[in-house]
Length: 239
Image 1 (cartoon, rainbow, N blue to C red):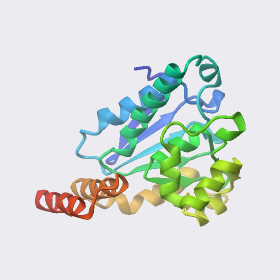
Image 2 (image 1 turned 120 degrees about the vertical axis):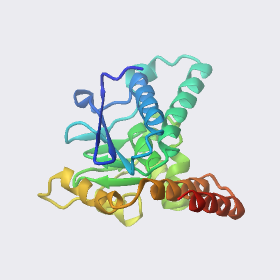
Image 3 (image 1 turned 60 degrees about the horizontal axis):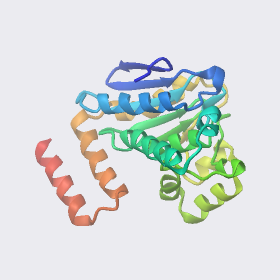
């Protein structure tokens, strides 16, 4: 695992993860994707956590898409499939993390970076942070689970439109359709925006947050009501 461009810190029961590659717009090279997945998998056993925050370094970009040099190096269908499945697996470590994960959009998220953002449970954005599923501009498609995530979040019509047009949504528009959960005010430090969103979550107990996330994950996976109720009962007994 290459952790050169991944910085982590645990503070007051929250895991903070930063993609530290601002000079390359926090582009998601395969080593970075692998490190993100490993970081979340390794932290899943920490029963003291109530949340995690994932952000990019700097103020311009949360994350660009896949590293263009690596994408250009894909020569066969087998290589493309391996990349897609490996990245899905890494992002599934975020989706399946036992407590809520907040994507802190310090800047724009586009292409694979948008897919990374929607793999998280919540999106909190700086007032200048736009988001766009621009894969079609490169004659590509979503590949890392972002298509289904987007459709779950905003519905079929909004999701298909965003993928079909490649539009970069401004924060107010993203907030209006439920793609963003909170947007910072002008002049407010972005760290303050994130901490304000985190404040009520910090007041919860870790075991409660794990219970809420478990039921939420079962719903996302399309499990039936009986299965979700069984999960709810099991966690209630445990808590």
